[in-house]
Amino acid sequence: QGRGLSPARFHPLAALESAGVRASIGESEIATYEPPIREPGWTLGDVILGSIAGIVFGAVVLIVLFAAGVSVSENMFVAVAGTAIYSSFLAGLWLGVVRRRKLSWSDVGFRPVGGGAILAMIPAAIGLIFLNALVVLATRSIVGDVPTAREQVLGDQLSMSGGEFAALLLLAAVVAPFVEELVFRGLLYRYMRARRGAVVAAIGSAIAFALAHLVPALFLALFVIGFVLAR
Image 1 (cartoon, rainbow, N blue to C red):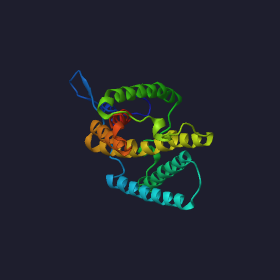
Image 2 (cartoon, rainbow, N blue to C red):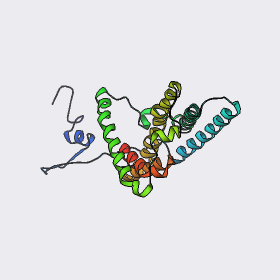
Image 3 (cartoon, rainbow, N blue to C red):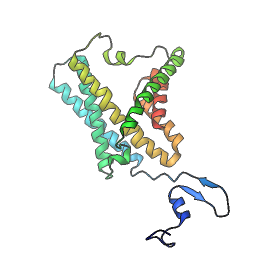
Image 4 (cartoon, one colour):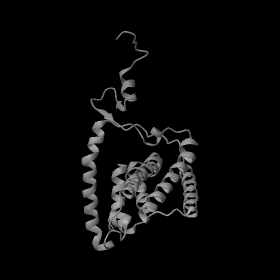
């Protein structure tokens, strides 16, 4: 016994149980098991309510933008409107789920990461890009030509200004990924995982992620990305 410890306070089997290991007296093997997944502090109705609020907020913002009649380029309008819509979804989900249920950002999957994890994301992202390219090439004969990111943003335009590039980069690299992670991996995936398991949750959230982008030709590629990110 160590100082301050007694058999009534400490038991090796109890310690193993609390650490996620189950031990049996008289057996030579120790079996590991996964602790039960904690129920999320929100419901599917909360996510739907927050999404509806986000749609309403986004519609109001678009109406205001059109009513203001601000004269900007097409690229800048796409960047401003897209940022406004995503920000509206974020506001709706924050009010409808996070604030309403008194959740922290860590409850929905946003936690600080170390420098090692950030560095590991670089090769992981490169590998995901190659995997996505392989999926696109494999499905091209079925779905036809897949629009590139440049074609989706610029259309027939051949160039953009520095301000347009910065605004579109903010939308594509910061705002949109943050909101999509909150919706599909933070809320939807965690909700489904607690009820149907990790595999079903990854598949379901990946399907929702692919459908939400409204690009049929990219459905399979987006599904693969959503599944990998969820896992």
